[in-house]
Image 1 (cartoon, rainbow, N blue to C red):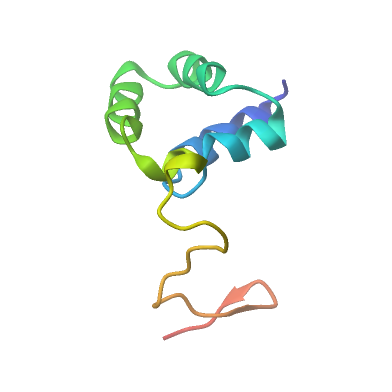
Image 2 (tube, rainbow, N blue to C red):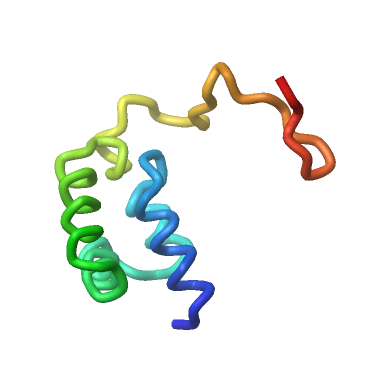
Length: 88
């Protein structure tokens, strides 16, 4: 696994709405392998903070989510055009 893949997996693991199933689909690694990667790549304090945040979180598991399909979108999120975020 190269640096960019590792970096993207860590980024996806930190995101609340990205499930372990999505990481598995994109990178073909299991939840346990994600945990091992996070343990290896993060500082011990950052890993403990991540584990505390993720453990028991229903949004990280596809089968436990409260919504079936679609994508969560914040009501304050503005449209993005030409790679520039609209100003408030």
